[in-house]
Length: 441
Image (cartoon, rainbow, N blue to C red; front, side):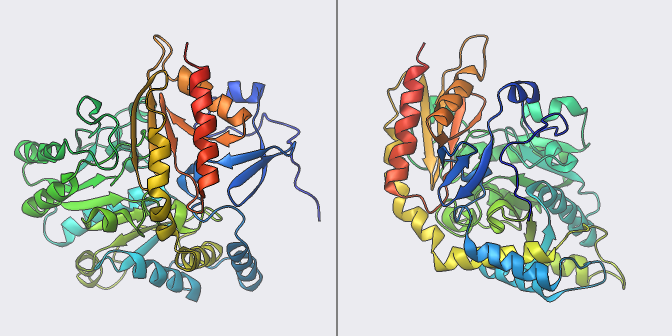
């Protein structure tokens, strides 16, 4: 068998996603392998993974149980179509997911990523409103600074400016709620901030403006990619009440908060407010094989599927929906989720992680720290006329010292694998603190 090269011999062909390609290819950072809590470079340097890859490797890297499940399935059947056909392992994977989702969200539609899950959820919401005789409900509502992937639906409902500005007007009939980030009221909060539940009331204004044309509201229970923005206490409950009052579906994007990240199988459980539709990906397979899914409430499935005439009920799907290898990986990952009690492990170390994050308060240019579950955001004062520069330099210093962090703007986001232990936490925040001090000027 040919070995996989640790270093590529040509950097030109690969157009890297969400990357400064020119800068990277002048000084590339290459990860060669991964195991447990660590990546390793081609030179053998150990890098603590402070971000679980991209919020996704919740059970840690290189889990034998997942690898063996993929290998076994590949030897039995590598691919099977799911258009008017079926294969058992996709049904098994859906049943496993339905055991974890909130009560009533018992039907699972498979996708290949969080982006596809977002677009699928929006389509299902529109199909549901039409199926129940509310075809005028064509408007979708997101939130400022929200992130729902890179499909046109998710980008339209999403509210991160740089992700949108290159691509024109995007979808019509979209509006946005205000974001929940208010450091003037909530700086250095531990857990959910006390101020801001009333921000959900902006939905009333949108209803007053648009009438009964709103089909769905999509939010992240905890906004991760935009820099760890937390829902104020009571915010999601108020949003749920307003959606129920006005006949609007509530969609949670749980691509990040799913599978134990904040100490429960899904964020809906920890936060005590269930949605009508829930998207997921990332931790679903521990990132070993790309896969996403959308869980929908029984009444939505019944309205669309049972209420339709004979034939195809939802004209939507993907070639790789319920892919056999992804299904095998999902089943193995969910089994690990349970056998290792990953949510419980996250809850057990959450307080230690929180204390470590807030120990950075008082360091130069640290203007806010926020945390919930095993997620933390450290916001830095940006350099005048050089936005993002300080955080990027902190990232570079951390990587050189053997710790992988993530930055978005001038915010550092941390989300380690849920197998993280206290010495890992000490190492992550110790190196990060030194990097922040080194960029004090």
